[in-house]
Length: 184
Image (cartoon, rainbow, N blue to C red):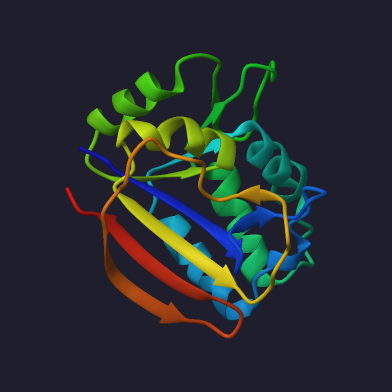
């Protein structure tokens, strides 16, 4: 069965974007960007909510040839990685993406059962629909030293506790990453 990871950069007060939906405060430095590239390289599939997909599609397929090599590397990784985009409003997706319009929970269950690799879920709204169904196996939280005071929280209100076990903590110049596995 595939492992599902929920990962995000998050402010110290738990938000993935600010009140205006901006994420400019979370731009990674070179060290963290390379870590994300390597992490993304090892994924089999990436699951995106609509907003995350639109944000990524607006930038990564259009990175210029004179951009930093780390950015060019990620642009190639992102455009080529198989992606499932969950949206009821989009009519089409591109860059090796498949549009899923209904029943995200069942599709995620199906994708988990269809292989033994690793996939990630990105997008707070998509994750909020999946988290109550005990489908996430690991959390990777990249805490950045900023307090936003509002925005979209990384975690929604949930109907029950989820026990986690910390398996790794790593310091970067611009963030602290903690990995937690679900203690089932």
